[in-house]
Amino acid sequence: MNPRDAVRRFLAPSPRRLVGILFAAVFVFLGAAVLRPFGAREGEWRVSRGSLEESVPFAGTLLPETSDVYGVEVPGLEMKLVFLAEEGSLVAPGDVVLRFDDAPFRREEAAARARVTELTEESAQARFALDAGKAGSATEADEATRSAEAAERERDALLAVRRDLALEESRNDLDEKERDAREAKERLESLTPFLAKGYVSRDEFRTAEARRDRAEAELGLARRRHEALVVRTLPDLVKEKTGEADARRRRVSSSAQKAAAQAGQQEAGYRLALARLAEARRQLDEASRRAASCEVRAKSSGLVVYGEVFDKTGVKRKVRAGDGVFSGTPVLLLPDLSRFLVEASVPETELFRLAAGQTAELRLDAFPDRVLEGTVRSVGSLSGDASAATRRFPLRISVREADPRFRPGMSVRGSVRGSRVADALLLPIEAVRRDAKGAHCFVARRFLAPERRELVLGHANAQSVEVTSGLHEGERVLLGEPDAR
Image 1 (tube, rainbow, N blue to C red):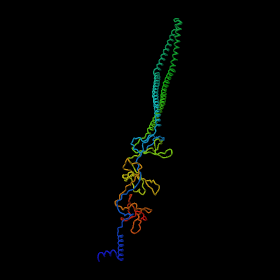
Image 2: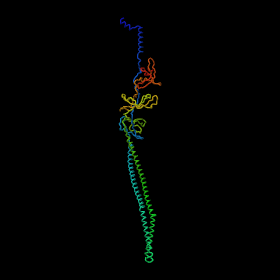
Image 3: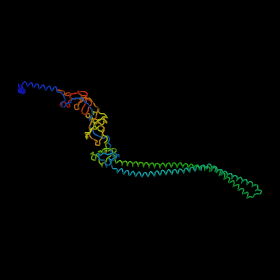
């Protein structure tokens, strides 16, 4: 048979040959289907091993660590706002950020200053009166003391010298009168015999009688004077001088008491003047402090953010110049742009993965290409959501970097780094299902329906989870529900 006939015969086989060829093709197809590798198809995932770095994703808001609040510093008063630093501007320490109308306080300050001047003069006069009163009282006390001492010296002199001298003089005078009376009597008696003989004239005798009588009379008077001096005159004089000295000494005490009372009154007046002056000065200082507080300066650098108030119609709006504000109203906020933190929240199922001090990676929506690092500062112990199904807990993260372009309120996304597992059986998060019985997945089977497999999970991050029990390496799991395939 030539080659041409052979080709023609192959291209036009007999029916029997056609049946054989058909069976051979079916056999080859079935063999290929059985023997081809059992690889993952679309919507499936082959379980494999790899390293896993645990992380907890979060989304939050960028906030300054510290933010100074400025407003009215005088309690209980409404003050008119006349100047605000431009919102959004950066200010340095010492820059004026607010200014209120200080006219009422300046008037108070002027009145208080005039009052201080008046009371300063009044206190000076009170001090002068006190000093003059003390000087006058001292002079009066000295004079009274000298007068009392003079009376005492006079009394002492009377007792020590004058009394004895007066007694001695009176006694000498009495002795002299007795001697004169005795001599006059003896003279008269000596003349009596001669009168009868006529040797003495009657006139001479009468003269001698008269002299005797006068001497006796003078003696009687001298005796009465001496008795009076001893019994009454000298005791009365001593008593008088003693009483006068005592009276003057009492006047000294009385003068001292009077001077002390006057000095006390003057001292009280002076102290009252000083107290009123101190109060006036305190009021002046307070008025000056209030006037000075109308100009508010930044205590630190930061970004100017206006506070909000309710206008007369009840609409909440930003503050502006001309508004009247009370103490306690946050007129202006000055967040510090040198230190930021992130306030976020995480579900309660992730709390066991978090602890203070862990490192976090952050991205700001405004700067998506920039990766920032942070440190977990605290994990809240109280939930901010009362719903058990959506209960979340606050998370605070300190940002390690700062940028003048960062602004409070920017949206932040990131994750907190946890422990690292070098050789873990990994499964995508989307393959894990949860219900009342716990975590599970669906394993794909050849020629059979997917099998539900209960799982025990370990570490996890935003993409994968570690399977510690329930799966084997190489098994295929569904990424969706079984009825979705």
